[in-house]
Length: 158
Image 1 (cartoon, rainbow, N blue to C red):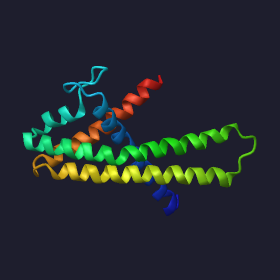
Image 2 (image 1 turned 90 degrees about the vertical axis):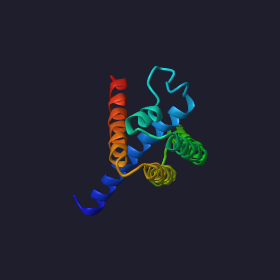
Image 3 (image 1 turned 120 degrees about the horizontal axis):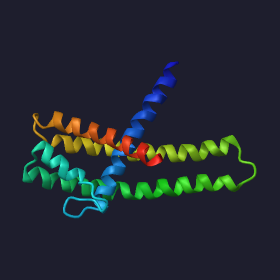
């Protein structure tokens, strides 16, 4: 595999992981009632607070960062959804050129990358809230959330 293929593979994997994390945090913000989701799962923010032993001040700051993040990325998600809708609307066309498919693909990729980049920055800001002792726990928590989401989506496909 040449260097550009390796780079693209790594980039796709990173984007996928970031997307999963973002979706988790998006849904936890909408369905949150006393730390539980409507389907009975515990809110990741509450789990994180418990596992990391967050102070009240850290909880407040994390909540503010989360709200700020969602205000920023909601329009981007709307834009991404519209771009994907336009792309898949092409399926009803008889002949669609590869160059047109590439144009739509590039639009979607650019929007997705912007979301992923902002989410990465958000995670760095959240991580900075924690003490040096809490940061490894946060890193582990994020990795567990990524693995859990991958398992959840695999189980839903069965």
